[in-house]
Length: 113
Length: 114
Image 1: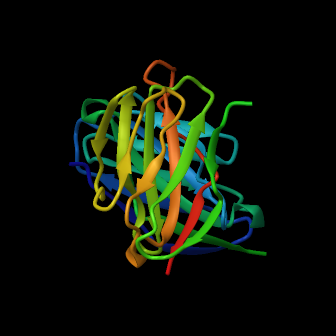
Image 2 (image 1 turned 90 degrees about the vertical axis):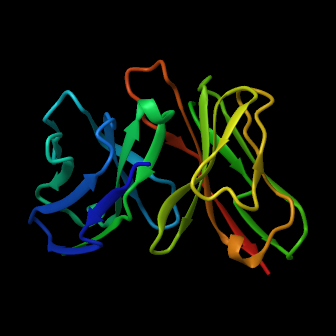
Image 3 (image 1 turned 180 degrees about the horizontal axis):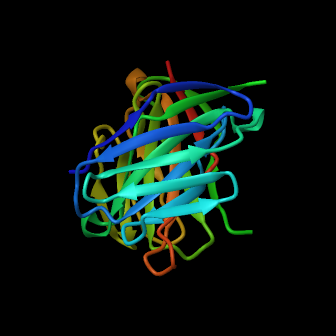
């Protein structure tokens, strides 16, 4: 089955700096890669996603890149703000595996004012 | 409002006392799934369902049951809860037909088994 690894597990950045989280996946059949943000005690919320036929996608201060050959994808947050502090999860989905979403272990991001 | 509704939000129970956590979605999604979230282990899939009367095991199904008698509901059943099932549980749904495969999550159920 799919295995998703996520690094780093914790990330501390100064407000205004950029944050980068990296994930690798194992199943070459995976074709959809979402990122979720989870604030303390709340549900995971989808913040951005990318499909396997796209190399990069941007939405305001967040962007995701995908390298299918190397089987890795990354989340980039620019101009970080205190409200970006949360746990971020990457995930990979394979249509062939019955729409199962496999999550990485999560990255706790702390943005220091 | 499109949503996934879980109940209860919090539950404290004793070992061995059967319980059910309900999950309902109003988006006509075919796919529904249960995850448990534990510190350091991320989100792990318990069971999933691709449509009515179609369910299958995820990565950590032991000690759980599910049913999918109606498209909108996907309850999680713990026949004999044990302390190692203390966790935060999320129900999620998605569609195969929409332009994206994004999951919508419920608010979560924090279960404590003593």
